[in-house]
Length: 459
Image (cartoon, rainbow, N blue to C red; front, side, top):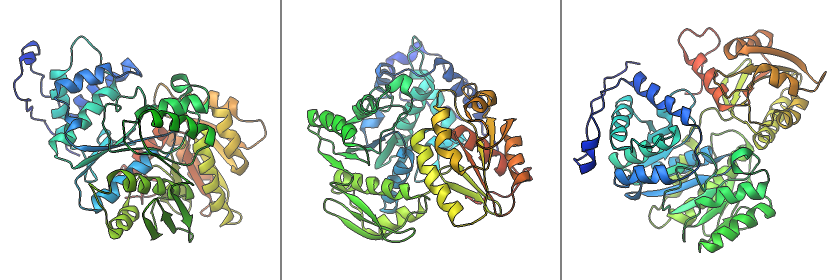
């Protein structure tokens, strides 16, 4: 891809501009270097910096409708489904998700199209000019402001915003959304969110707004009660999976939706896994309760959106013979979903062996994750994504019970992927999992023209 030289278009003159020198025009690679360098400020939970920055940008996020989606797992897939259905209904839709798999631009989309390199450069320059030089914005704060401004510039009708981490102090929690979806609650990011499900639920429920409907995915009563208490304090109606709405499987890949007022039959989504049917149920409930009056959808739009939604790196088959599956499951909740899917694939092909290439971050529960998956695995290849927060192969090796599986350690993720192909028969199954960062690295490898292993079939 040719990297463009990005023009600098300034915001209308304001008094505080005098304190800032014009930012040099940066190329796209230089802009990414600047953005990724912001990771040095780590994770900063709090809303002061993002609130102050958005004030300087004249609150772009308040000029269009929004929906806010949080939860431990499934929030990205659910956001993609909501966006796809609204777009199929003829609305101009923005979508903000994280992390990206290959290119930063994947995080910010309008009408299903990634933000352009030119807009990334331009918006980075604009935001640097208005940012408070006394503070230090984190990477996520900066990119969240970029998304909100881009959606304003692109004149979207509605934006679907995925929470980054937690909810209460997440940088996205500056919205007045039409509605909120919390997909589910599991143990993840305990250092920031708490060590029990109720504690984590309380943090994620922080995105609930006054009077805005709250849709809850499948979760234990003890967890949903915590969220419902917070919703009650905000006079926000709550709609629970299994009580106020539900889905019913009517075929191998077909389901029906039964909501508060609406019912849809013969639905299909091209996202694999039974859990995606539940995610679709939550997405439909959010649209039914929060946007039906302002953004009505026909049955055809609902069906078309679900059938055409794309979400890379989540139970994504990129090759056959041998089958290669990418899945970014990175916590025990995700591992259980992956287990169910892999078990069905092994059941349908007697004699098939499962080869897993695993790379994880240091702060994840390696032992519990492996306890869930290992009963299915014939060969486990532990590897390490190329980033500082990744667990080393030694750390993962130590988490594997002795004599439980054929085990191999290869630090380089591409070489680990190649080794999986060397030992796999055409009938076998290779699964790349444990981290979206590992999935993104593998996707980048196999989409490079020089790659000698397979052809990526996912686009």
